[in-house]
Image (tube, rainbow, N blue to C red; front, side):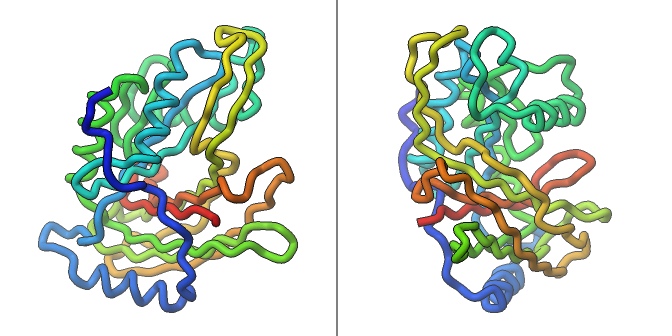
Length: 273
């Protein structure tokens, strides 16, 4: 692991700004976009890890993702890590408690978009545009830098509110500040949980205690983003929380993704406290 992993924590604390004021903030930020047609808001980079507790080569990638999320990167580069546990390793003898066919299907979607011949773990997809072996820190850092240099085209705001019934209300606001596909984008919203510890009893990681961070618990489409520059949108999503989920370890990430190419044009994350 290179010594470059240091600096700011990437997941910010929740905003308390009313949604109407949030839209105004986003509009103001976008009004000063540089000539290249991107927002001047710093570019958070979405790093998606496809992993499994049944895969013996995955724990180093899990640790890398945790370090990226908790320590961040120098130079103000914000990383938004998300861990998707696939289900196709479960047959070996250990059923990953965080695995889902939906996450395997998401990885298959990236395989098609990136013209890959096979699925594998650990795999990291950076900002929907490039993929590398998840434990290869040098390649991951290089692709994060490339994604960050392309800038942000969609500014996103998130407000988190714990509802009286125990659910999590997620208010979202978007502003298209740069060039995006004419067909528009999907605002995808992921609920994740950190600091999960699992004693693995069988499979390739038998007798190991695995630690997983930024594990995606739910993924929804928040709204359809109009592709016209200057357009704005708002939406509210409600996540039902399971009793075993630790509220202090939950967070939400939102990212503007092209449903055709799966490239990401803007992202933000907030943690529930």
